Length: 161
Image 1 (spheres, rainbow, N blue to C red):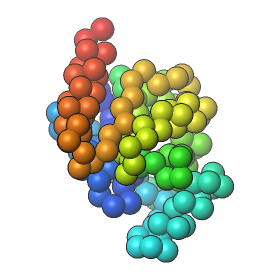
Image 2 (cartoon, rainbow, N blue to C red):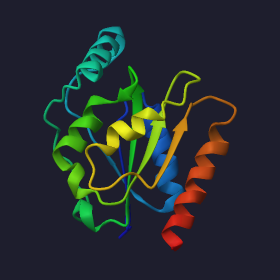
Image 3 (cartoon, one colour):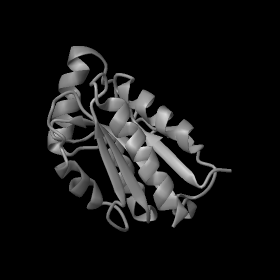
Image 4 (cartoon, rainbow, N blue to C red):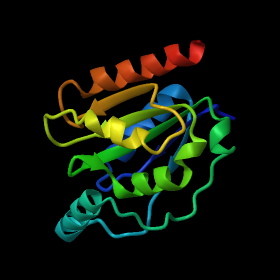
């Protein structure tokens, strides 16, 4: 049983791919979450942006983890950036279960050149303690593997402490 949990939401599959790569490199448990809202296509893209801007959340679909959230040495939350914020399903998870996460790290995936580091602080508002590590990835970018692998190494060093 892993002592690292990687929870993620992915609208297009890019965040899922990044989260699974990171989870595999760490031997971590990977769990996808969703709120059941259809964010697919152009209409879904607009729905996603509106919901992120309004900070609304829908109930999460059931998901299963191997142990309670507070028992993991590290919970990694992977989310796409929607309108300068985390995705609504991740916000919903944070609102409902964030205080159970005592040691968190964030993986943001983004389409633009902006790093969106302010999203880390937005997410920290819902957790028991501020994040210990974070990375902002741009899938398809030439630096993607460098930053992803650097994050994995940072997590390994953190866990050695």
